[in-house]
Every structure is written in C-alpha cells, then in structure tokens.
Length: 264
Image (cartoon, rainbow, N blue to C red; front, side, top):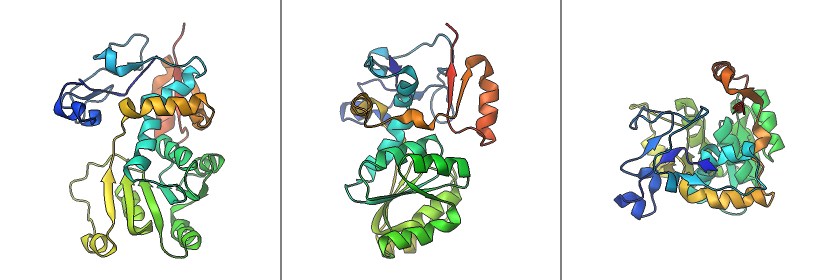
C-alpha cells in the first residue's frame, strides 16, 4: 500500500467538491510549518489518520521503490502541468530539477513538442536529459526558448525551484497568454511581482501543492503500463538508520532523490 503525503477528511466543503488538497482538516506527514503537526512516515511503524482515504492498494507490477513516488513528488509534478492546462504539442520549460521538477519533466515528455529543463547542477541536467528534456543552465535558458519558439516564449513554465530567482526566470520565459505554474514552495511575503509585464502579456500565474488523492490512480496505471518510470531519478538508496546522512547529502546537492529502506 501507499499513503498520500497529505491527509484529508473527505467531509468538508473542499473535499466534497473534489479539492482534497484544500481540505479544512488537512495535515502533511512530517511537516508542521503551515499545517497541524503530523508525525512523519520515515519510520518502521506509522500512524495513518483517515486510512480509508489516505491508503491505496498497489498493483503487484509496481515496485515499492516506484510506489514511493505516488505519495507526493509524482502527483505534484504532474499537478503542475495539469493546473497549467498543458496540451499536446506545447513547449514546456521546467525551472528547477529537484525531484518534483524532474517528475514534471517526466510527465511533460509525454505531451510536449519541446521540454526544456533548467538547473544549475550538471548532474540534475543530465538526469533531465535522460527523461527526455533538453537541459541548460539558467543563463542559457532564454536563448534556447527563443530558438525553439521563434521568440514567442514557452506555453507553460513550471517553476519548481522554490526561489525568488527561479520565479523571476520563469516569468521571463513564458509567452504572452502563457501560464507559469508554481510548484516550488514560496513563503516570501514581498516578492516583487512585475504587474505591468503580467498585465501587458496576459500571463496566468497559478500555484499547486499537488493532489495525490485524485491523481494517484491515473499515475499508477501509467506506471503499471510502463509509460512512466519515476525510479530513474533515484540517486541513492540508504537504510533508515542513515536518514540524517541522506538529508545532508540532499542539502549539499550531492543527492537528487534518496530512497530510505527499513530493515525487515
């Protein structure tokens, strides 16, 4: 079985209208920043509230390692594209190639004519290319977008960096009447949004935190049928006892996605 990264009660107004990510009683495993505290799932035993909703039975054809991605990062990357209304033949740029950004690349490669991945880290750019993107450093991104779109800009730009610089870059790469879909976590209250540019170019700016409850069945089907293989981005596999070291590797940007394993 796999659990969604967030819990929802299924009875509030948001849930009843198909918006469980906005549930009035939502919590996120292992995170207590803007939600009520809920202990994390990186343990041998985990208490799962609302288990009848949160847990999903897996197909035997999907490995445990692949199933981990259904909990959060794969639905989040997928959700960024869905919220943007990504269509067949679009040019899609993904700014920031951490785990969520790479999942957006993986999903976009099924639809887009051009997928451009932007990151400062060479190893992550290499991973993005393996997933079907053309990968560049931030300073080279505008020239490549211009080349591939005859100067129009990208139809969809997914901002997965979670930084003011990443958002500024994304807003500069999108075409007129295009969509910037923000999936990176932003909490700065004073981001200097260029309202004049937004208005003149009719740019849509949307945010998403992912919707694993609604999207996981569809994504599981794609995994079972061999359409998506999220495990391609796993860089390290480490025992749960070395979790602190795994986080240190990720913080140092020496790891892209770490799978923690529990002893039997």
